[in-house]
Every structure is written in structure tokens, then in C-alpha cells.
Amino acid sequence: MENNWLTIENIGQEVVLTKCSNEAKGEIVIPDGVTKIGYDAFKECYYDVTSVIIPNTVKYIGMYAFASTRLSNIVIPESVTHIDCCAFFRCQELTSVKIPESVTKIGYRAFYGCINLRTVDFPGGIVSIPEEAFKDCYNLQEISMPDSITSIGDNAFECCRELYSIRIPDKVSSIGDNAFCYCGRVDSIRIPKSVTSIGTGAFNGCEPNGIVVDDENPVYDSRNNCNAIIETKSNKLIAACGKTEIPSSVTCIVKSALFALPTRKIPAFIKNIENDNSKNWESEIDSAKKWEIEVLDFEGNIPETNNAFKGCEIEELRINVSRKLAKIPSDIDAAVRAARKGVGGRVVFAAPELCQEESEVPGYIKATMTKNDEIVDINTKYIVSVEPDEIERYHPLTGSIITCAANGVEGMFQIRVYESCDMVLQKIERSLSRLGQQVGGIAGLLDRIETLCKNNN
Image (cartoon, rainbow, N blue to C red):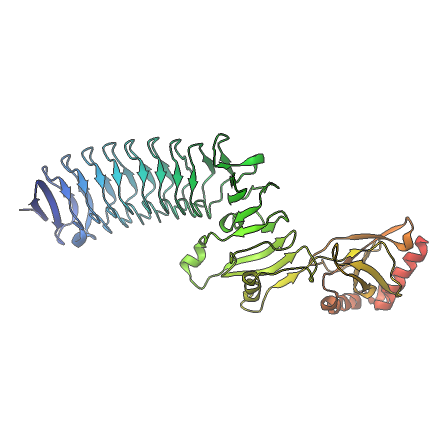
């Protein structure tokens, strides 16, 4: 039978709305007695229908029932118990949804891509939020999840970029992969004691002010008020934020957590970087866009990386060991070479450390590259500055100010040396040309050092 623009059929014991005509416009009133809204029912009138009145007899809203329509308002009656997959897929003008308590099941991608949806009010009967249910709802600001929820599916709220409030109910036991991925405005994250499974990249791309795990959680913790989520048994840091401080008991960090840290500085006690294949939002939009890292700083040698930096670009790599001891994995090496549009990034090793013993060669300082590494003589013409007589005009790439005693006496002076003396000579000579009138070039600098040594004697 037909009712205005609607095709309604008796299928078994159900009265099903199977089609809405492409001539339909404005507000559509579904007649009483209809129990199901069928698959793709409003496919042909997606553009001109702006509102639908659903009667209290409807129990089921089918797959793609209202997909891609211009609905700006929808009232779901208390009779509905099941909203199937993609029922409101990409309803881009829908601004709010209130799901009644009668609904016990929501299907995969039910509200996917509703880019203007701002608020969602859940009923108390739903126990699971399925995969991608609200993915790409870019303007979703607030969700009210009932205490009945026990699981949050993969990508359930991915790219809800305006979402500022997340309250994970106390009965939730699992949070899926990328569940809240790129919810960039979330204010804070609290993991209740009930959560025993957190998927890969669940909070990747979030920028909360704090992360707290309930003290009674048996699987995860945020020890030492670190503002992170740590897998207790493995000491693996799986989620971080801009205020994270990595506890010294952590031995492993996953890629998505690493990229959430306030700086890309990896402590020496980290032994492994786990590749969780986390997403980069920019490369999702533009496949040519790499995951760019301005500075990647290892406070010790580089740990196992498990190909975590594949597809990245690293402009500057800092390793706090000598060139001889440094071990650079292939993925990091490729990321450095790819930086600056293929020109390549910069690799900086540790500055030399001064030795107690004196060099027997005039004009040289004896130093060791690191502990247990070879001892070398450094030509003083590679010294960038001598303090307190400030000669330096270049900020060093790496290393620290080194305090040394001339000939073992108490008088001290400081030198600062670049990590790669042979590569930086030209820079120093340019600097000395600017300072030539003060110190007379390299010879003058050596004379200044010799004078300091004699004065200290």
C-alpha cells in the first residue's frame, strides 16, 4: 500500500516502510501501525526531506534507513528498541539526538559522519557502543553515556574533534582501538577501576590536561601522578598527554603515546618503543603528508624501535652517546634522510667529555667521547667559546658546557665544543672572521687560551 510518498508493505508479521518517493519534500509523517523502517527507505528523497515524524508503533530502524538525508531534526519514539547499522549515516544537518531508554542496541556506524551533530543523550538500556558509531562527528561536543555501558567499540568516537567532555562509566571493561582517537579538545581522561582492556591508540591525538587511572584498577595505573596510562605488569606507557612525566620504572612506550608527549625526548631508561601502528590525522587526509618530527632526542642510545618511525620525517636527531657507540635503526635513518623534502635532517651526537690527563700535543685538549670509549685529542681551534671571556657567537647543536682546570690547578675555565669538530670548522672560521679584530683569528684564540692557562698557573 502507498501513503502519499511512502511505500508500506506487510512482510510476515511486520508492517514495513520500504520506500519514500523522490518527490517527497519537507516534513514526512509516517503513519501509525508501521513497525519497521526498512533498508535504505529514504534513499531516493535524501535531498528534500528535512524532518520525519516516527509513530510510537515503530520498533526497528533499519540499515541506511535515513543515510545521507538532510534531516535536521529527528525524534525517536519510546517504542524503538533497535537502531541498525548506518541508520543515520552522514546525516550532515542533524544537530542533536536523544535516544530513548527503550533502545537496547545501536548498530555499527549508526551516526557515522553526522558532522553537525553536537549533543547525544544515551538511554540507560544500552550496554555497548559499537564500532564507529559516532566516528567523524566533527562538531560533537558532549556525550552522556549511561552507567549501563560495559564496552566502547573500535573508533567509536574517532575524530570527534570538538568533544570536550568524556565520562567513562564505572562498568566499562573495554575501550576499543582508536575509540577516542583525535578527540583533540578533551579536557581530562579518567579510567575507572573496571577497565581491563584498552585498545591500540584509544586516546591517540587527544590533548587532555590530565590523565588519571583509578588507584584500584588491577591492570593499569598512573603511578607517581604521571598523567599517563601505564600497563602495570609490563611497565609499558600506552597513553600520554602534554603534562606527562615518564616514571623511571617505565621500560617501554608505544608510538601513539610517544607522539603525545610534550617533547620528543626519550629517557635513557626506555628500552623499547612499540609500534602500535597508530594513525596520523594529517596523513589520513593527505597520503603524501608525513609524520614530521622537529627534534627527536634520545637521552641515551636509541632503544629498539620496531619500525615505529616508518613514514616519519625527522629534522634533527639527537643521541646522547658518541658517533662510535650510536646505533641508528633503519626506520630512524630513513626518517632523517627523508626530512626537508629529501635534503635530509641533522644527526647530533654527544659532545666530548674532558679527561683528567693533559694532552702532550701543544694546542690540543685531551677528551673522551663517552665513558669506556676511546680517548682522543681535540684541537683547540675547534673550541667555540672560552668563558668567562665570552667569544661564542653560535649556539651549539648539542652537548654541554665543560668546565676544566688548566694544568690541574684550582682556577677553572669553561669550553663548549661541537659534536663533530671537522664538520663545524667552517662555521667557527666564519665566526672568527667576525671576531678577528678582538682575538686575531684562530691564532689569537689559541693565544687567549694560552694566556688563560698561564694566568691560572
